[in-house]
Length: 98
Image 1 (cartoon, rainbow, N blue to C red):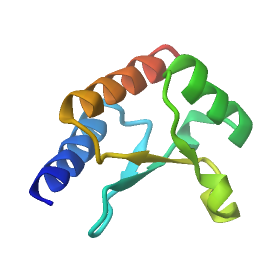
Image 2 (cartoon, one colour):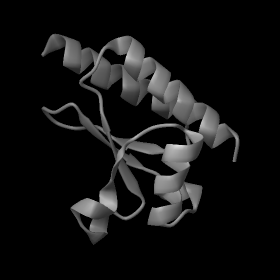
Image 3 (spheres, rainbow, N blue to C red):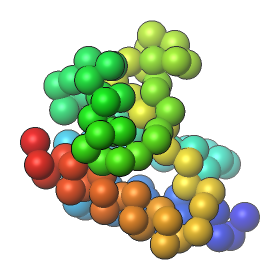
């Protein structure tokens, strides 16, 4: 649990500091982070394609959890720290390429 908490905190802090276009919702008691990507100005399909093709990440689409989550993606932070760091760097590079 301590490891997962540290991963969550790392991801939230990094995204807030380095990817301001994406707002991260801090979860309570979980390792699943909701990323509010609405500022990127993409529809759900375009956002999904962006994550796959540009960021090279397979995140969960928020819209599959309900219409209120259109424009959101879900990131699982329950992984080795190196994997999480790489994923977030890929996300940062993809957003910076816009």
